[in-house]
Image 1 (cartoon, rainbow, N blue to C red):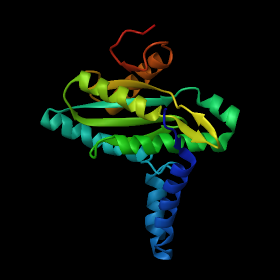
Image 2 (tube, rainbow, N blue to C red):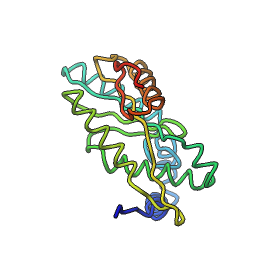
Image 3 (cartoon, rainbow, N blue to C red):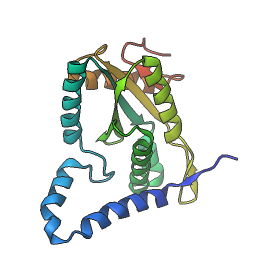
Length: 205
């Protein structure tokens, strides 16, 4: 029997911890709280897009200096609008929190993850060696996100599509890597068989 997880509890616990941390520091933490608001996504607590871009810029400098490779993964929740339409935006927020939690728990300690916009997330894997290793990780990540989750008595399986761009094979600048990973992600979304697509892959059927 497939186990499902109560994602409302998972999301509430994460949100409560974040707010408790801020609250227990009182008025003296106002400046630090303001910094957190700038650098963290308000819903998920993941690094904001601006903060993530700064981090990637630094990692690209290091990768070039030391001859390392890295991978940019664009992750999109499939049919997210249908979830909002069917269950309401509150449920949609719980889905986003669940995906964020699963991403944070799945990536390696030094890797980067952020909520990019709406139902899109981005992940950077540092010091990768082979595309095959990145593909394996991406498929495992898709499976982790898709683990059944219970929302108000309804079991939902969250499907996702992943596009991947490799530094330096698919670009050396952050904006080029983001764009190429985004293009690959839309190829994956348009495919009936592939959920993980690299930038250089032919358009899948």
